Image (tube, rainbow, N blue to C red; front, side, top):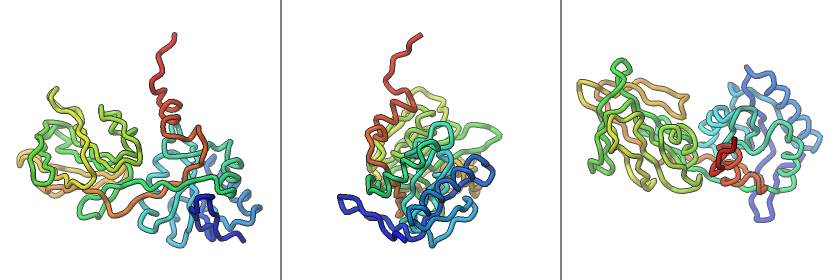
Length: 283
């Protein structure tokens, strides 16, 4: 069995125990996972098919089939174990994936030939790193009154108070997700920075701000409208204690994404293809 694969630049991945993960609710994903496993096994690579409910710490390389949500869930699990992830898109946009279902065989060949690189993507941590996220941390206030007054401090310096539905703290990787929908900027994914974006602020002067990843972001609220919930990547949601403050920092963990060395997979190509970035409308 093949144990390691190395690129010309000396980047190695351990393929002694490859996990191919899919959402158990998706029949299409299961069929694609079986196809991927068969291709790898025929190439003398040990690969097993598992659901995203069966993450294991003995996996050395993860291939994830699904949309960005499935990849985000996988990234949060595998980041503490330094396991690289390769995404195959079965969803709509698939910003984090590198291949489509129809290109599985081609993608596997590129990986086996060492035509890839590993990108480390920064993650965010909150609640003393009890939760961490690849895309974003979102803090929201009282759901019944919709808006809350939130105070943002950076390194103990008061920056702004927002009357808004919530606040998004985004990584560069997550800048094309909720951040973009809320009016935030797109950042190159390997930048070492964070973006703070208010959700539906009640003033035109409230604007997104990009800051270095070394900063500590502290969010508090007024006593009559306390913070209520915090979420990681829109998936892990937790209730906050009344008047609980939230610190958001760069996480000690990072996600390792395996990217194919293909021109069409560059960040700018993905922007143009999936967001139609910079294209004039034609009737």
